[in-house]
Image 1 (cartoon, one colour):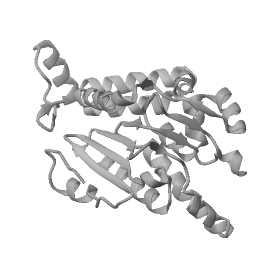
Image 2: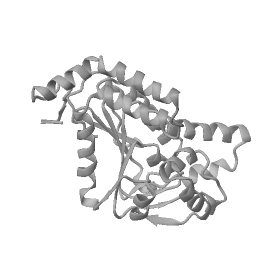
Image 3: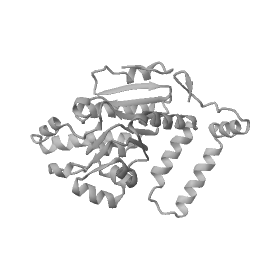
Image 4: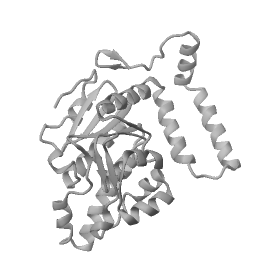
Length: 285
């Protein structure tokens, strides 16, 4: 694997993986790129990939040198959902085994969704079933205009259960009613219209677009970015009442007195870069 980063020490050791690993991990400055690396299987999930992705996201989320996680797929697909060989084994599992197996997938999805750092999905190709859940756990999702999407579980007599909390939040209840039940395939333009994606670009511009978003995130105050992510998680769907309003007051009051906020305001007034700017390779982010 190729590693380009000014980071050193435990992060580079803990996140490194051999080329044959199901998850390829590279990093550039404060950006960690996680690439699903099973292109011959359209990056479908199995036990090994689920475990690797869960561990990598947890480690990156806890490392103070990491600002942003970028999630993409190797080859032509983003993620085709569950590996059919893995799914075939499930038919022989006991109820307890199936619960444990589903629990590991659910834990992976929740680990990504609850990561304190922003996670950007760079959807390089088709996202089916669990792949739809994967991109829905990310904070920002951009896709190639050639990508297609499908909640295909009902075609197999299955349910999109573990992914449902995230997909419903991303595409809305009304759209979920249709696509959960019909398992219809739809294109990137439809995914954008439904709110599943934030941006659709020509495939040749996808990685540049995703990298630009990551650089934009790195240019902002790291604590403020994480706190803003928590705002969305905590306040979405909540009634606007006295308790919520008081919570907003408490949060901004606490933020204003931080060193990061003081530095950000001072840098703006003094027309200079704030001290939290980091380097990406040889270029300032």
